[in-house]
Image 1: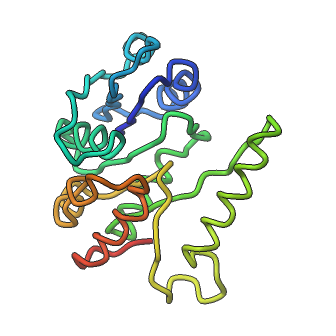
Image 2: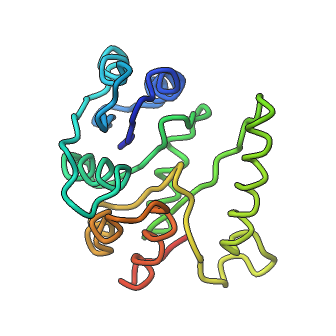
Image 3: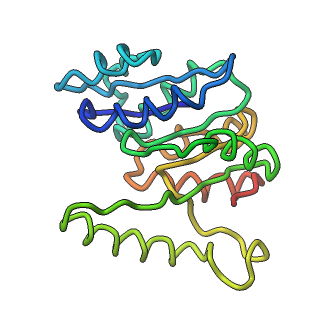
Length: 193
């Protein structure tokens, strides 16, 4: 599991706790601290994650793709799961994500259920809904339509398919790295679902 994180000290604990519950022997959790100023690395380390300090990105790289690429390069597992720092897994969630990625192959993305406890988050939920609709992921045609994007909070793929699609290096300058990653995967012949 690769978690890109910048100034996520307050949002990381619920994710790391859910990952602690879900981890099996051999699983690794890599939190890539992207130059945080709030103790993100200390929180992640105290929760048992392997903390990687992302160096300054090369010219042309946006922060999140650089953090994801840094984590993917250090991961030793054959399956990569990228999770946003503010995500949480339900019981059995990591196994379900890994199972989907293994079964479907290619790049698998999931749009997490969006909890909206604060009023401002309710406004963001509308934007997320529009984004979900724009991918064509939820139509009566199901998997017969090609995906037109991916959901960044939860992406999973084999390390081989990740490299074949160009990884985050192929979308280095993208602010919407999830959408761009789906496009580059599709162009490389890596299925996207």
